[in-house]
Length: 388
Image (cartoon, rainbow, N blue to C red; front, top):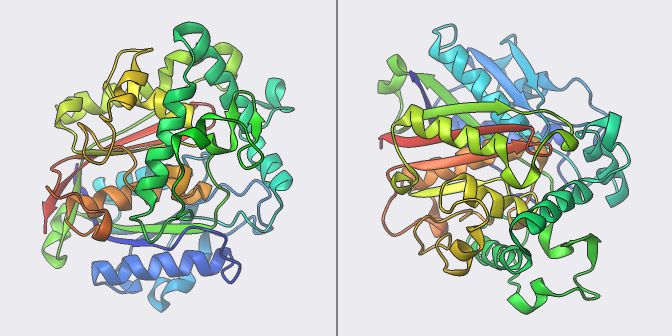
């Protein structure tokens, strides 16, 4: 592919009362432009990944990015919405524009301001990403509770594996200064219902659920012909997107068919297998989603992912480190920012610029699995360092 990440930006994730949506967008965009060493006038097009669904009152916000730098005024800008995969939708749209030659340099920002609403308000807004004809009365914890129930019926109780995933991701986030949650949890806490860890939606406890966060991330994407201008570059060995049916009732939930298919397509496009991947950021909106993603990645056949988790194969020092950033579980999940954040985190690892998160041996390939809805939209990128 003739399109490359040449700059990255990433705000802290969390409850950021002092920053509204526009401030988050501008902060991440300015960081990415500075990292790429360019000005606004060097950008040919702008893409914003943003879910919203009533989280904020700004229904038309693509041009907020233009306030990040004077030279961005009058550049074409558009918003991409694909539920929790909105960030990857924005990246893939920019990739197509750059690879086609229509755009030489693109700026992509993913952003969400979520904490302006209370928990009930956020739950209601996110619920609009489900199939309203059948699931309008369900929250997303209830939807992913269905995935956990289906998994349990098909393969056995996933509770221990889910708890181990939560413990791992909280531990990983302690190294990430940009993460929302810097608090270790132990296995006993994650395994059991308590006053501090209540049941949210059977069988998902609080410790199984991602955070309500504010935040933004950004990347600059440039055409191959422009690479001499930039100090570093990360290429796309694959960028595959799969959309499945909306209704839960139409799918065998334990098979995680959309993400599994997207991963397989990405491996085929890149000419690699799971054994070639050095790290992965996957969409652990709920811990059951990371368990299912572990199997989708090919680390274990369906129903056998629990052993992989128990053996530590997805830990920082394991066979394939998964969610070194802390994942959605502890880094945070500002919906529109999540897909862009994954690409930033993986790109920085590949370039040796991940700071405290950096693996001792710099990986040669990294994978992002970003998912929208109940495994409805799945975007999988395989990234490689090209320069720097």
